[in-house]
Image (tube, rainbow, N blue to C red; front, side, top):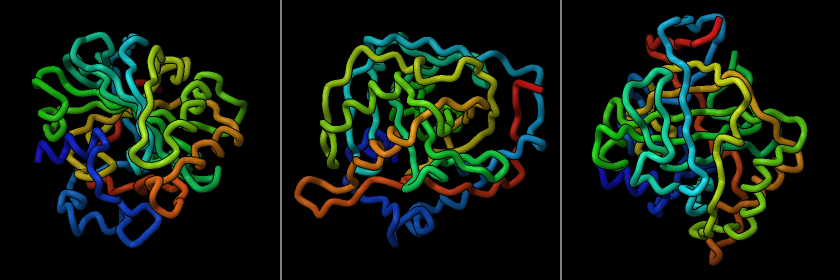
Length: 272
């Protein structure tokens, strides 16, 4: 199971997750029984039902730009990878104990600007959602942590339509080098903190990976404030391909899983 997690999360698994066709998220339960588990993600967050928890700490994100290494089209999104052999880029505080190292960030988006995020707020989706994936250093490696109940912490950031986002543009400028599945390029000296909103107010709940193998190992930290993205920038996301160079081009879009049942979980927040 661990090796599957490692292959899936580093994007080296060749399996097509079927976004937009008959092998898509609705059918994942046939291959992954945990798809119907008790802490699946994403969810619909209903602000009026979230519980303010004064014991929740401030989120501490300490990122070192030099740890960025590469950008990869893994066939279902693109991700920026980070060197995670030291505690140079970390998450601590918030709802978690201990130190979590940044492994990668990636995005989910729609075919149009009126949908694309995985989490929704009061039933409303955003055009895009950024996920920064961190692993708990109490385990020896990312792959060891990836299926443990407290193994991962993912920060979710909504992108809302507005003015062009200069920090995001630095990432989007590299997409022309990784148009098709399997392509990768060097991507260094980037600070992910520049992609975050000014205030780190958040909702948090116990959830899962939103892509196979759907391990129920994620403490989700979904930021309340969105960052801007322009329509032109969203068009660049959709220029990527699910397909390899040898295959008929298939545009990468609607690469999100819809909200899953809450099943009695409580969503907490650190703001009133």
